[in-house]
Image (cartoon, rainbow, N blue to C red):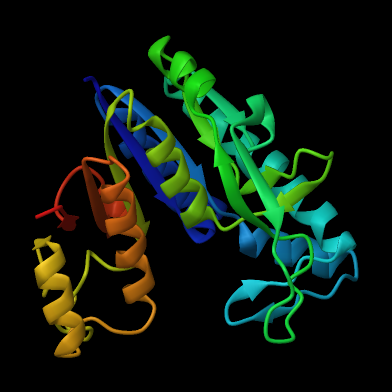
Length: 257
């Protein structure tokens, strides 16, 4: 199978001109088939404030009421997405901006109220169809996925970008040899969170269980790695956790046994 690299980058990287330019240079240099998934939360918060709309978060997750849904749809699907697409076109990459609603790639259900928290118009992915997406990729088109899905009944839903990346990778794993790369602010998974150079080069399931047991891996990194192993179990070849500045080199590789 042909190799496909799916890169997920957070909003902070794509929202600032200098880091976006570096990212697009590095992404354009990746050989073979590729796709990019992005966030954009800070831009959404900024625009909402300018329009007098309050941003509310619970456990780091955005509450998406009707007004905020309009903001994130404009920002994620429009401003941030098309800015990336234009930047890639300037670098000779034939990019196409998409949401989960386009070509019915990703269908979600509105997240139910849980523990008294109503997240509003937030989607949990229920169905992925990577067939048309795979056809486009095979023809040399590079998808740029915004963190939005739809419910099949005409409603857009705000959806976690990490989830979009994982589901995109899984949805294409039957057709390509997929490497999923999560970019965040550290160089990889660290043995010592105070030592930037203490990157763990490879983590397999047994290693993960041991690192959690002895406290080396904790907090928000645990669900990130659980998502990585879930992707591997669904057919993704490998998952890499690294910094945006080190795409294509270094980082932590997450592998099956």
